[in-house]
Amino acid sequence: MRIDIITVLPELLEGPFRHSILKRASDKGLLDVQVHDLRAFGLGKHRQVDDYQFGGGAGMVMMAEPLANCIEQLQGERTYDEIIFMTPDGQRLEQQTANRLSMKENLMILCGHYKGIDERIREHFVTLEISIGDYVLSGGELPAAVLVDSIGRLIPGVLNDETSALFDSFQDRLLAPPVYTRPAEFRGWAVPDILLSGHQQAIDDWRYEQSLQRTRERRPDLLDDEA
Image 1 (cartoon, rainbow, N blue to C red):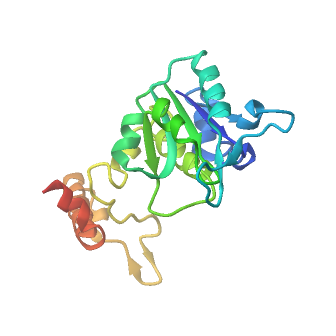
Image 2: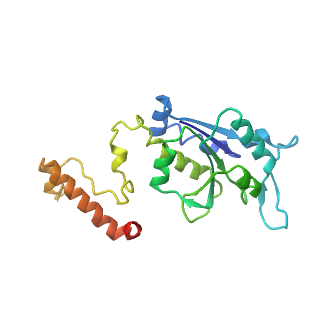
Image 3: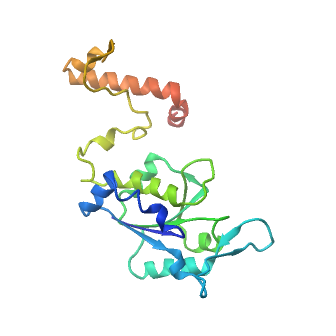
């Protein structure tokens, strides 16, 4: 999979893709993340990428021309399954969205900044708008990193245990059950006996019941969605 990210602050994305699971995905040749500095497409000698809003109002807006030129150059090199804009008013990122996007071949992500991007880019280029939550950040770079991480870990071969991603929270619209590791007793706090029993079916049943109980207590809305 290849993911191209367009940003005015590429420095913000230097760290997330150079460590841990995403680095492993890159080293294995399973995920290629390329970050593009929009200022390379900026206008004039100052490489301008933003301007004042028509109609007045506080805050600058990312201009249509630099974005269009960057997008079209990338489109000339490959076909994109989705052109994604990270924005607070997009659809909320959920596990099912990450699952679907992880099966794509080429994705492009636009990182907004200032007061956002010229609406004409959204109308004529963007195919999917995603929010990571009902709050506002300084730009789309951190949300883009979250999206890439949620997608990249699902690509077959990225995780050491191929099945582990299948049991993450939200995969079956349930929260994950409690997990324990050695020692079996710590400060008098014991691991549930069932997990030490060796009876896999009983363990699986216990984990399902724990997931259901935790979801009822913490995220009942997930169960309501299933109704």
